[in-house]
Image (cartoon, rainbow, N blue to C red; front, top):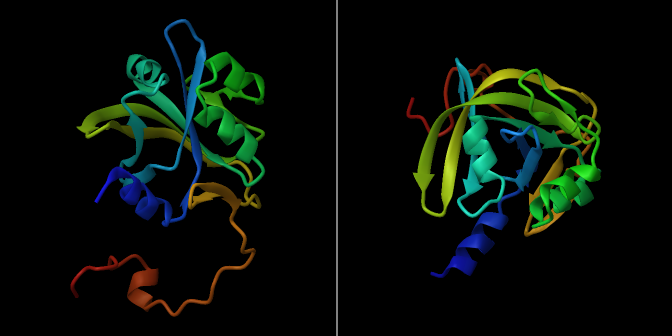
Amino acid sequence: MNDETFVDVMTAFPTGVVVVTTVDGDGAPWGLTSNAVASVSAEPPMLLVCVAKTSRTLPALLERRGFLVNFMGERAAALCGRFASKLESAEKFAASSWRPSALGHPHLDQDSIAFADCETEAEVEAGSHLILVGRVRDCRVTDPHGAPLSYYRRTYRSWGESEPAEQDVPTELSKGEAHVGEAT
């Protein structure tokens, strides 16, 4: 197996797209696009984001010890491309509308459908990346009817379906009493 094969496998799994933002010690905004985000805990509310150790945004994330996860809407592909690029941080933010969150992190309020404002709880080294575990201090769905932007096979896409697929979910799963893959 080589690195390219691994990336091909991982991009065969569709994900949502986020822009992770923060500010540095001088108050300048920084941000990056990611599809490596996951919930960690509901009690207390925590999530994780994976950031490449080579990211130019990482020093600001480490200095600030906090970040905001902007869950991007389906019309934000061009903006996500900018935040995924090597453009200077000021150029990335010049193309977006944003306002500071309660914790002072940039919220891309016109392009995101939800956000989670976090304080960094832990940092875990994992290969070429650093996993940042954030305690969610504020979160909100800002566009309840907005469709998310997705990433599949190295391409941004709109979610596509307006109606959920029919499901035959056992009652105990729908109530959160069991976890997929858990022995009963």
